[in-house]
Image (cartoon, rainbow, N blue to C red; front, side, top):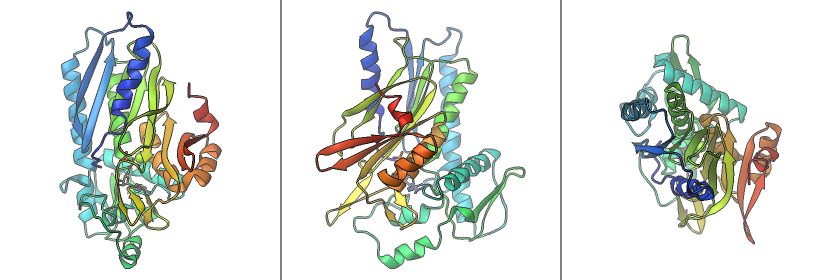
Length: 342
Ligand code: ADP
Ligand code: MG
């Protein structure tokens, strides 16, 4: 789940400043807890928390929770529960924590809802294309390598029994990758931890996936920016005013390599075994759950602007596609997303 660059952190700072300027003299106190997790950064803003809240203790609990999630679900840590499941040469039920079981079960639901566009068994292809823990590549893999990896893909080959709790795979070489889900899940868990500790006004962000509750330091809905899909700079494409919502973005403009004039990015189309190639550069999804938003953004990027937009509209998903055209970047939105934009 490591990813080198946080997508929205700077943008968020800019967005929060935007709302601050509206009433410069009336800012409420704001505290930030920040650190590193899942190969990226996290940032949590608490606005006017109750004076009785132990902020240092809360920061420690939050950090502990993130360390636990990463230690359980990372494919970059060979000792994580998930890595041990992946390495197991067995098709029997393997006992796992209730939490990992429930995360895999929810992720499988999303794989089935998106007809496998989001597929947590895509790991062998992710690694083959140089976007996993095995390191980067500069030349695309050969067709026979892609064919071999594709024989290991298929979310229906993984089952959960969370009554036990345990998971199993139908083929020993199945490899589960939660990188397009776990950051969102960790954002949800952090938000729920804050709410359980009586913090109502907050922003949680991990590597660009985020969730907000209540209001910002200006007493207004959080102003969240969607950035333009540009390789080397950060510019605001649009701003949404949100409360009690989660936002996730998947794009092809931060984690990619180029070969022979083609761009190969870290979103893999499980149907072809190759990185997505259409003109859709980024997808942002707004939802109640950051985990769902995270997975759906990946699924919609796989489906592309045409099929993805139809799918999102049918399913009532608030989604924004940023598409490269001859005249620059254009947005295509579902009605649910348009309603959120300023
Ligand atoms: P980011 O990590 O930049 O937030 P995503 O949430 O889109 O971006 O996750 C991308 C990661 O998800 C990839 O690095 C890879 O590990 C994994 N992945 C790639 N394609 C798929 C897919 N079709 N379904 C599920 N996971 C995927
Ligand atoms: Mg994602």
